[in-house]
Image 1 (cartoon, rainbow, N blue to C red):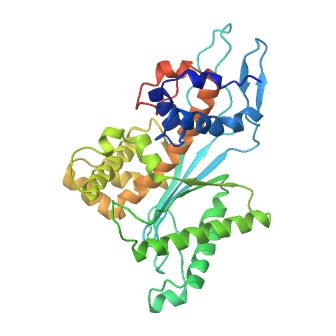
Image 2 (spheres, rainbow, N blue to C red; image 1 turned 45 degrees about the vertical axis):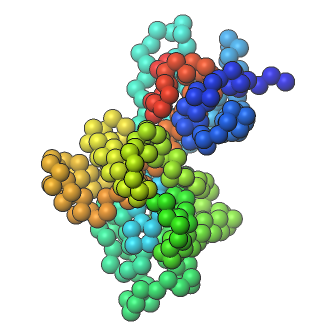
Image 3 (cartoon, one colour; image 1 turned 90 degrees about the vertical axis):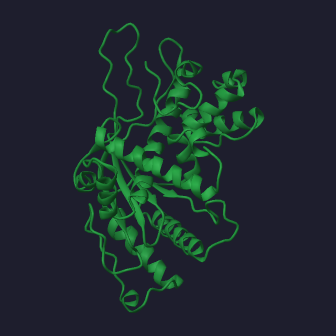
Length: 344
């Protein structure tokens, strides 16, 4: 039986790489591996595939009564950052009019950033940015502890008091790695964050099974997010230690996040998130900008959670475009440039 995605077999390796990177799947492999990976990523759209009047298949996601509430979390203990993005229920629905109808194309749907915050789950005093989140525990007052019972309590409290009130439909959690910056040792701090990450998954799964939350948890690979926003050449630019390269990538991503919230073309800033944006996006000069970013505390964590959330939004949009437009996307997506959706 012919598949709607058979055209992938005619693509060059560079074209498959571009598509894979645009939809957030693994991109470093051979054609034999990339093609089924891309097909698997697009398989949910096949379930909603329906022919139109002219015989062309269209991916029609199930209509939602309510919009999308996306919670993107950049993992940490002392520096956990998260942002809340909202999209209307019409997001991902086919929006382009039929060719025979001469209508003005609809304006692109962009997410709204309503909350953007960083918290320290190991201390009683909250970091007040765009939220009034308070995570308290009498045991932490005496001495910082990393005992599993305490962090199980932190995970439950963080989810039930800060996350569930936002009614998220999708929770994106940054995947943790045992090693970073090319290091060979596994740091104890990394193990602690991994433990807390696992507790978040366990708590969310329990709430799903109890019927208290019906959303979806999406693990996010930070390397894929970085490659999506920063060109591959920039990620490995120059010679030197892995730590130096990582610092360059970190600064580049902070600059990208700052420009996004400043221009307002890819995200609308609303509600309590304006407080953070005003501190980091409205200043000029390197010294002034660094001072403002230090004021909100580790802006790189805030930037990471925002770029992670926006990357997932664009991946989902790109999946729809690949499914509906087929080979036409290759005319618009040049190698290593895939953050924009093809024009109608």
